[in-house]
Length: 220
Image 1 (cartoon, rainbow, N blue to C red):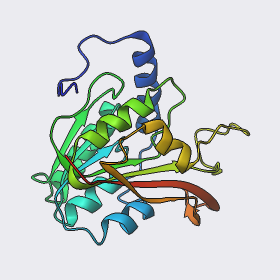
Image 2 (cartoon, rainbow, N blue to C red):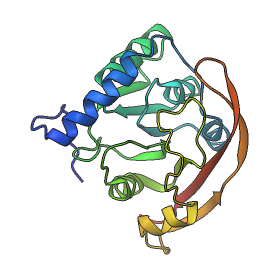
Image 3 (cartoon, one colour):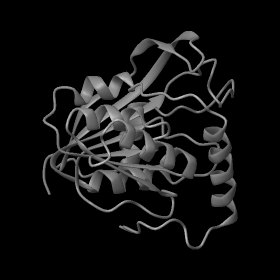
Image 4 (cartoon, rainbow, N blue to C red):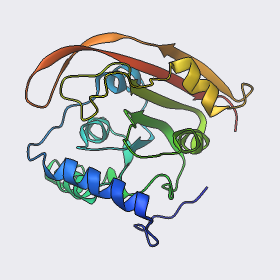
């Protein structure tokens, strides 16, 4: 596993294009959102706080929610704007000692450490991304007993940046198969497609479907 913590020293054209896209996306979002993704709250709410990794932290609502509950959170994103805003917001809330925000192109670098919870909420991008490899790396960064929570879009919300009318959306079972983890060391706790009423950034609402996969590491 590459545990490089520095920003990208040898950028590639595809990585630069993706970085520019997500930089523009977050720079255009001037509002502040501390909202937690509901499936993270549902999954992590009963857990004893430990070390958590938030992959693709974006505006940081999940990271801040976890930190408020006593978790030590490493939050990563490709956007430097998202990372800097999260650092500042954590300091404003008195959570700076519980939040470590790092910029990573996860196709090339991955944060160091071991975790009790890894959350990958809507880790989608319009650019090529070795998602299975990234999620396998995330799974192997878990301590025994730790949880990997993967939540993907199962439908398109009106406010989504991706309005492809017929995208390929892998099922939770397909996602689990793609990870190809040893069943002797990993247990599937949840694999389903719940529907919920969601609220967009401008207050609009829609019914959406999520694809949810929760895995527990049972052995080192």
